[in-house]
Length: 274
Picture (cartoon, rainbow, N blue to C red):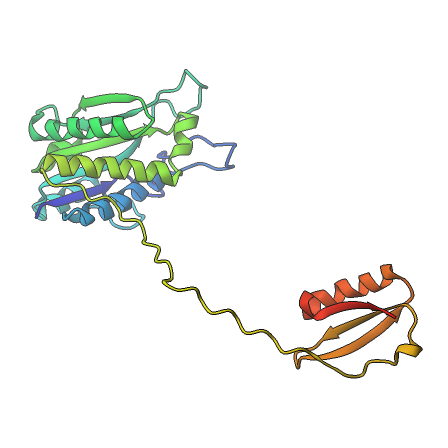
């Protein structure tokens, strides 16, 4: 059983690792909000497909690059995956002017890291709406110092307004996790196991009809000859019908009825004219 090291870049309070202020939601989005959400989803995806995982940066605090690499190397992980969200100039320039898209970053030496990155890029391109920026060979600490194939994914740009809002979209987070999980499965030639949908079991027989409440017992009702106008009657919790009071107009009686409806329930209130 293969062991996959999962790394969510930065921490919730890492300086500068956030979007510009987004007026639509009235706040910034920290990069780690997205990174940790995708890592958590990817962890579940991989475990369902039969892989073991090790988390290099548990919790919300930032962890040094050296400690992340050490966790993966000490665990003798078979593959290292780091989740990130990119940035260029830290401001929104407007549609058509901002950078966009996803990329997979690997050590310049290539090898198995490049093979996995190319598989992952293929799946991300099929599953997400982002621009495909391809595989990027770049000298990065985590990909250079891990002792296993390693890929750092940049899954969008924080300084692109549209892509920034995708960071907190559960459907986009899930899609990124699913496509990377599919890539891991293809890389190791094991079948991807999709998340099962809950089975809805229909009852075999028609449920019995609910018992009907007994007819209320009338008491304290005034004599018909003494009443003129509209009368409101209601049923208390003991099931007995009681007279409330007489009203000269239907409008006044209906006002009283609405009050009693809120207190005793609609089924227990009636208007009777004598």
